[in-house]
Length: 147
Image (cartoon, rainbow, N blue to C red; front, side, top):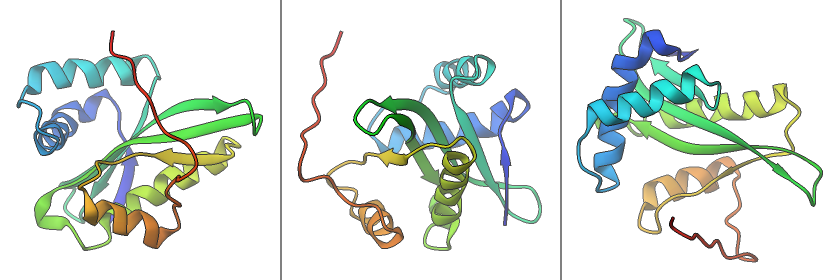
């Protein structure tokens, strides 16, 4: 398995995986909309995406990272916002490999940590994250305000 940083040249394959990811999270299939969203993120350097590929070049999954800052720790944060592995390739190390790409990215930019979130009922992902060493935050609550 190998990984590559996605560019707009990879948009078609990335969009196919992203569409599956959105459907997993109970969103409608909308490849045209998701492709436009991803294209804008990539063109504006607002996200860094890595694709996991098998030896034939077939895409197995992706990780999409955004960036933030922490005032308390006075540093950058990599936000591992989206992680998806095609169902036929799960439990084969692909997700862990993609997460390592986020760790390497964070180290290369001098970030103080990598943050992520997942659905409360996504137990497989939670087990993976905790096995790797992520610690679930029991100290703070997250809040959102929809506009």
